Amino acid sequence: MRRLLFVVRRPGMCYTVCNRMHERMRRIPMKIPANGFTHAGKFHADDVFATALLQILRPDIKITRGFTVPDDFDGIVYDIGFGMFDHHQEPREYRANGVPYAAFGLLWRVLGPGLVGERQARLIDENFIQPLDLNDNTGEQNSLCDAIGFFNPVWDSKEDQDSCFFKAVAVAKQILENQIDSANAVNRADEKVQQAYRSSRDGIVVLPCYLPWKNGLYKTDALFVVYPSQRGGWSAQCVTDHKTKRPKLPFPQSWAGQPQEVIEQKSGIPGISFCHASRFLITAKDKETALAACRQVLKNNGRLA
Image (cartoon, rainbow, N blue to C red; front, side, top):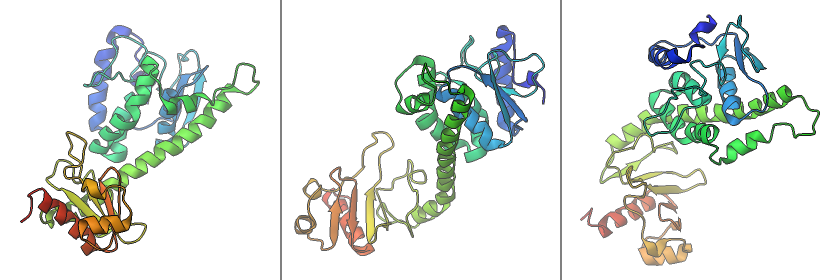
């Protein structure tokens, strides 16, 4: 794999070539080369997480840091070099929502879907990567970026900067691996959640065990999810409206944050042990009690006779 695939030195060509390459790589899995090159000096969350992503995909990749890309470098170049995975040149690339890409986002756009699928890759970009890209492009405050930045040696330290960089990469890699594992767990759960949704009645979806369910019920007419609690007993949770981001039918205000005896007295349902103060979650002694709590909310809102 020649460096020309990743680095375009003529700024006037960069946008056209990057877009063409991006569309092609969306269709053809990208093979990560044995060598990578990024900038030296002070590092940020952007180049640290970009490196972590490459290491996840190719653990034996050799990353070199420097201030100038060697003319004979053969490998992937990112966050430097005016290429496909650099973001310091014009014209800059922006997402549809106006958030500019940084190197991590540019790499994830190509590589993420192959790791977690298109939908989960988009969600990780929206919820995790975009704030990091925004920080790198605009300086907008971000606690994770600050934490990664603290790995840089202080001004009077004799620590080797590259050693500090790879310490930060190790932490970022663990975080990113957890993100990827979580996304794939959601993908594995989706079929079970959809199966439960197809069998649901009155907007109440009953799961056979705790599963990540929000992705599978996104934009459905489901109102509640009932499932065995990991703490024992059963839980019932309100499904959030995808537009307002609020529970479609919250549990009653009179239950919210009250002791068990108060909830039982107010509801008339023995066995409801907890109702979250934000009214989106209750716990109960068994499945039937959790279902009874959901049905009462449906009746109170004219959804059930």
